Image 1: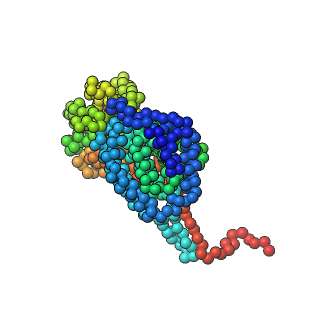
Image 2: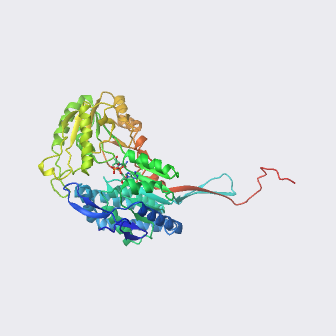
Image 3: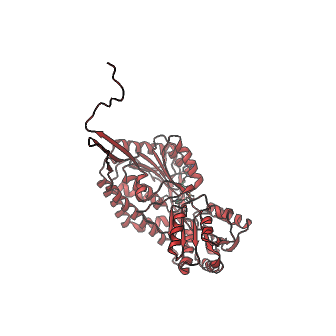
Length: 491
Ligand code: NAD
C-alpha cells in the first residue's frame, strides 16, 4: 500500500516514489509499506489546504455542521475501534488492550470538540456608549501544520486535528514516520464521510524534510507540534521567520512525590503505573520518584520486588503487562541513559537489561529502578522516555517541593498524602501543567493539557485547546458616526 498520502481529497504516492517499511517493534515483522513524502509533496498539500481555506468551504460551514462532522468521525471510530487499535498496536508494539483504550480516548476527543464547535460564537462587549456595538468573534487561523510523535500516534494527532477542524481551519498532518497507520485510517474516515477536498491533508515522511518544510513554509499560519525538546526548538526557529502561531507540547521530567502519610498500597501501585505504563514512553510519566525518608527504604524495596514481576510481551500476548520500546535506536538511548546514571553514582536496584531470550526479537527494556539519585545527575534532569524510575528522598515538605520543582521541564506531577492541606499547598506551588493528588495519569478532554517552562508553549484540550486554532477579532461598530474634532479643519 503506497498510495498513502492524502492530498486535496485524493490518495497519492510520493512524487519521488519513495516508500518505507513499517515493522512491529515487538518482533520485527513487517506490518505495512507506506509512501515517504518529500518537500514537493508538502508544497502541493499546503497549496491544497490554502485553496480550501480561501474557498471558505469549511470555515464558513456552521458550527453545527462542523460539530456534526466531528461526531460522525467519533461514531465511525467507535464502529471500527478494533481495526484502529490493531493498527496502533502493530505500529507501536504496545498491548492491544492499551491501544483500545487509546482509541476510546480518541473518540472522546472528537466528541468533546464536536461540542466545542457548536458552542462559543464570541461575546458582546459593553463599550459604555449606547451608540457602539462591540463584539469579539473567533475566526480560524488558516492553514495549520500538525506534527506528531509515535508514542500515542492517533491520540496526539486527534488532540490537534479535532480542535483544528472544529475551529474551521485547513490542515496538513505529519505523523511520526514509524507509526503512520492509524493516521492513514483516520483520513480514510474523513474521505468516506466527505470532508471537502483540501481541508485535511496527510503527508507521511521524515521530520528533517517533510516536518522541516511544513514548519518554514510561508503559507502555513500555525504550527502545532508534539515531540522532543530539540525538535521543538528547531521548529520554533523555523516558524519564527514568518511569525507563525506556534503550539509546542514537549517533554517532561515529572515528579511523583510520596509523603509518609499517603495510602501506601495505592501509592505503590500507582508509582509502578506512573513510571512503567507504556514502558515509560509517556511524556507525563512519573519517572522521578521523590519519597519521604522515613518510608523510603521499605517502599523502594517493595517497588523493586513488584517491578521485577512485570511481564513484558508483544501486543497480543495475553500474559504481557507492558510492551517493547519503539525502536532499536530508542532502546540504545535508554541503555546509554542508565549507563550514564550508574557512572554518576546511581545504584541499579532492578532492570537495566533487554529481557529474556523470548524478548530478543523485539526492542524490550526491563522496568528499571535507580536509587541513591541526587539533583543534578543526568538521570534526574534528562528525560529517558523509557521505563526507568529514579529515586530521591526528602525530609520536609519544603524540601520535597524544591526537589520537585528543580527541573527545566514542567509538564506534570503528583502528590501522595492523606493531609488535605499539604496536598492543596503542594498542588499550588508545583510548577507543572497538570498536578494529580493521590492519583497518576488520568486526564480529561475538557481540561487543559500542557507544560510550564521547557515543556512547551500553549495548551491542548479544554477551552484553550480550541483557542490555539482561533484568532480573536474585535469588531467595534459606531452606529452613529460623528466628527471627532481631534484635528482642526483648515478653513
Ligand atoms: P521527535 O521530536 O523526534 O519527533 C516528533 C515529530 O517531529 C515526528 O513526527 C518527527 O518526524 C518530527 N520531526 C523531527 N525532526 C523535525 C524537524 N526538524 N522539523 C519538523 N518536524 C520534525 O519526538 P519523538 O521521539 O517522536 O517523541 C518523543 C518526545 O515527544 C518526547 O520528548 C516526549 O516527551 C514528547 N511528547 C510530549 C507530549 C506532550 O503532550 N507534551 C506527548 C507525547 C510526546
